[in-house]
Image (cartoon, rainbow, N blue to C red; front, side, top):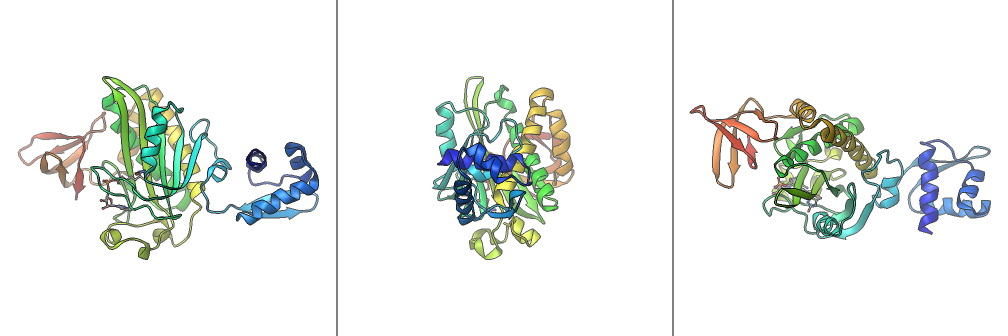
Length: 324
Ligand code: BT5
């Protein structure tokens, strides 16, 4: 059954929004025209809007806002990222599941997505609020052949990929706050969490967690983050199809990642700087070992933030919370 569903959706994907004839579907699935009609009706029940025109066939007009395997696959244009999809209605954290899968040796590009996280994680044991069916809670497993100290660059690359996808889909102009926040109108719309599986000098896997607020309205957020959080819906006043955003993110990620593996961090760094705020101004960086105040003069080729103190000393900051 799921094999048939997959073939059917692939046929629509290949038609790129155009019509697929009943004849063609019945050939592809190896079933009768009556059976084709039944499969189409099943799609409708699941929330797909389909148009049927005599002599032309069927066309998908609108997809349901679901993010299970089929919805992500239909319309996915990547060569390798996101081809293996682990979808869950509810999980503790997609990061935990991705860690386990990475240990088991799943291949690069595998993604874990959930409609809801009950124990979504931020950095330093903070929590990430991940309510049901309104956001994108996703982890991407990578296996890059890079030195361990270069892995923070992937957090910056991820931010660029997500900003590009959001810009393209919504026309909004998000900005990046080093290292892992994406903001719109000063409020956080995306958080990124990069975790590592490595030994000595070898990277086994990099697990990139992305939390994106998509269709929440203001009242959805609990009090403690209402003031600091926003969603694409709040900023744009319209609902978005999460699967489409996931597809766009994976596509822009793949382009940047291929470039990164080929040419290194330089081209990504230039893009990152073009989206970054809080550069060339006074900031306060709270790190685990203390607070540093100074001018953010930029990031180096490793992705490390450089802050010049009043005494003129340049500090290297690997991880921190930044206040402007
Ligand atoms: C982050 O941490 O921003 C990384 C968030 C990563 C979440 C993804 S979802 C998929 C994957 N699975 C996981 O379990 N995690 C990843 P940090 O910079 O530490 O920011 C955390 C802070 O952001 C919290 O302390 C809150 O103040 C705020 N926050 C929590 N939930 C939020 C939300 N939905 N939107 C905006 N801000 C939020």
